[in-house]
Image: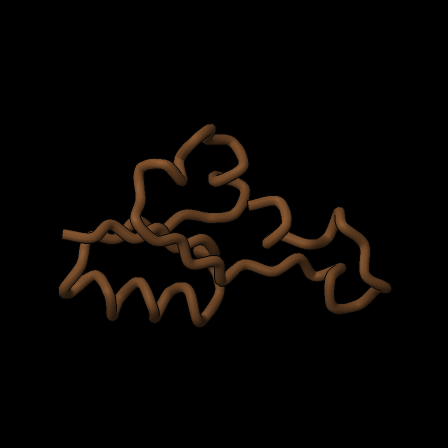
Amino acid sequence: MKKILIIGKRGFIGKNLAKSLNKKLITNHISFDSFLKKTNIINNYDYVINTSINKDYLKKKYNKNFDNDLKI
């Protein structure tokens, strides 16, 4: 069975996606901060879905420090 990691625990999309996928698949739902603390966690999963966002990413000019996708 496929294992899915969902990053972005507090957002609407992350919560509801985890609820929906949890019925039929093996999922783990963690916050972006938890993801950064764990090393090589991606290697344990078949798919990684990022629903997290940095608030500065929306408000300010693009900067690599605000891009969560790039960090993953």
